[in-house]
Length: 94
Image (cartoon, rainbow, N blue to C red; front, side):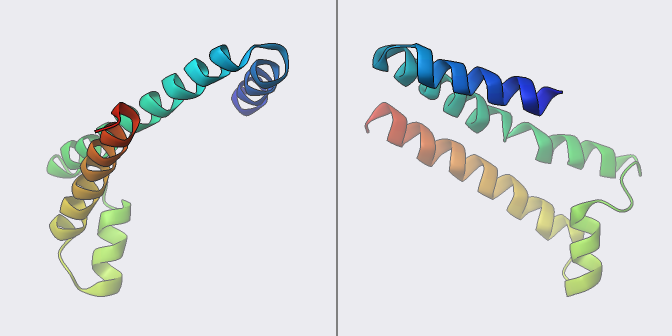
């Protein structure tokens, strides 16, 4: 249901609104995704600290590659923060 509603909203905005509204909508969605992408690694770190995510992506990658799960978690943090910084700089025109 969420996917259908989101797709419908995007379709309606792209068909029924002016280019200024479309630009503002796209800008807001990209900021939402960039900011929302930073939270999951912190949530995963918190769950792992209390043993709540034994089969998380970081743990599965640790088993497959023999690199510590903490290294994978660090990479998740680095990618999300670098994406936020790079995307934010790009959107702000720096």
